[in-house]
Image 1 (tube, rainbow, N blue to C red):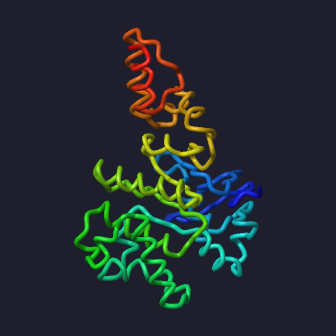
Image 2: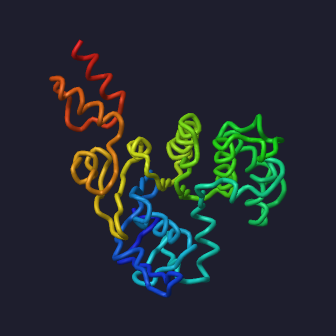
Image 3: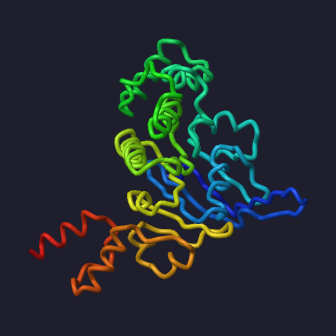
Length: 279
């Protein structure tokens, strides 16, 4: 099956305020498979947000190319089609919420697509149901928690029926409970709605839930593989300024205490299952 998104020798250079040219991406080659959940991780300034903004034509390459469903993002005639296919959710939901009522905010995208009112209502109801937001449909977004705001922003993109959602650090401003609620909703969209999902995050406990992950540093892809494969190279992760998942850190501590846990543990439930078997 052809990839949904493909970056081929992608480079991106921008000019800083001083006039100096800065290369934010340097020779990126990447394929995003249809239906997968991909984590893109890396420190601030690693290039992950710049890469993601190429996926729906917010940026265009200065070198190489990006294809979305076979369409080049550099061709302005393709941008409208690409943005219907790939939806973006940003770090701060306040930048995406524009209406005074939740259901009106969710309807904004489908209205801009020129859909008939009956279909818009259907799309809004589906998005509210999918993200368990029915109780909030008549609320003002300004009165919601940060986690609820982020879910409304996701619902607004979901109502446009994209084949892919790109989420740029969607839990960065949330407390642990909000992060958990948003992550669970994202996982459900990928699993139940079969939406290709690209999650930009610096939280390793979020990346472990993805099918595949890449680690970026200084505009290049340094690591790529399943979470088990990537976190199995612990020294490399640390050298790139990232942390292990909490479960991996706990497993290391237990090994130091003489419990011979497997090397590929990245989730808390894996530790629990292993310890229960020992008992």
